[in-house]
Amino acid sequence: MCWSAEVSTVFSILDVAAIGVLCFRDQKRDRYYALAAAPIAGQELCQIFLWLNMGTDSSTCNDINVALSLLVRVLVSFLPLTFTVLAIYGSDAFGDRFKRWTTPIIGIAILFVTARLVLTLVAFFINPRMCTIVGPNHHQIWADYLASYGIPAIDIGNALLYVAIPTLATFLFLRPIWVTIILSAIGPGTLIPLKILLPLEWASVWCWVSSLFLFFALVEPIIGQAGAKHFSGPIALLPFGRTQFAPTLWTKSVTVGAQSLRPPIDWDIIPTQVP
Image 1 (cartoon, rainbow, N blue to C red):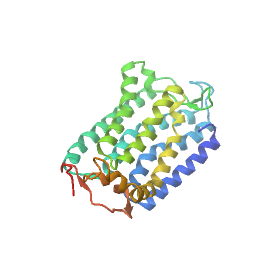
Image 2: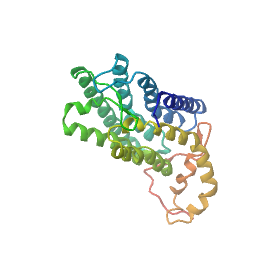
Image 3: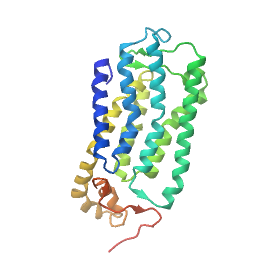
Image 4: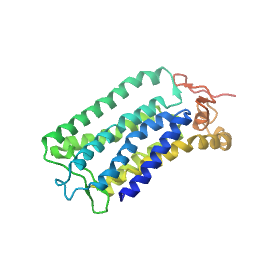
């Protein structure tokens, strides 16, 4: 998606506009969506100026390229944390079990982001000049500070934890479940194939995920209302459909202003059949 400064500019404007709408609308998850998308929108802005200051090779570029190459890596390092915050605090599910796991999961995300930032900054200062360049498919190849250590454990651990932490938080905490599934498809569901298909350029190509994610955030209340209207009946006919958890499949996302139309569920109550 980000083949040039012009394309990056268009997507950057759309991303910032969408974040502004979410903050102004301020429904159930809107501001958490905006927080989660902020690092992706920020790197999109960096890409504009990277295109205008592109390096000729991985070690030949101007100071603007060097600074933005570092900044873009710093920004995307926060994604596991911002999406974990979205999963926990943007969820419709509450209860003692939920609260018990909040601090450990947030703590793990903070530790990972901190370690990644420290490794990135150390590599930036101890290595020769590292630049962003144009790849074979005309996407940006960002300076890979973590790979400069040449330690497989760092590369593997970073790749696994970067995806695993927010994905685990999303499936453990974020409800309704249909929102969980869609966000997982947009995030890990696109990142992993891109990393396989475009091993050098995947990070910058993944910028379009911001647009998909923000588009979903904008239309989620509409989808929730439509689902509550058309699918609540059929869901009730399923084996699990008459439990007190069944309505959360759709109607938990329906909001009026900042208020949910249904009270929050308690995870410590065991689902039972109702008449």
